[in-house]
Amino acid sequence: MMINQRLHGFLRKLSSKQNKKEDFLPSVFIYAVESLQKNNPTLLLCGSVALILSDLLPYRKVHDIDFVINRRHFDNSDLWVRTSPYPEMSDDGYESYEMKQNGIFVNLLVFDDDVKLNEKVIMSPFNTEIRCQDLNDILSWKRKYNRPKDIEDLKNIDNAFEEAIFGG
Image (cartoon, rainbow, N blue to C red):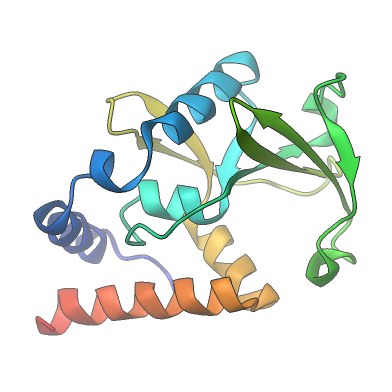
């Protein structure tokens, strides 16, 4: 499913009528994202937080922030602890790390350098740039891994598109 710019504009209007992004994503998450990207500009936000900030998902409770990066840019400092890959993704050629920053769990998927990570820049509610993995790539991952939260996210996105097109 390619995201049509016109539909994306409808979704932005729809979500801005219902809630402001500041209301449904705790500012501590946004500050954590901005702080991490300031220290390493090659980190790309991915997962549900990226979709929420892009107005493609309504708020749902999130417990962590996910990022992707290529190995050549990864600084394996003492902050990062190696973890087991998600079982659904174990054959995707990446290493998994996590850290806790200000009470928030941050997951990092480190991919081989030959894996192209496409980037999209979005604006945060505080009018700063946040670098994300391309939204189409995030949606492809959600379709591929098909975990319960992915199924729910995809259903919510489909419902939002239907409302935008048909007036719900």
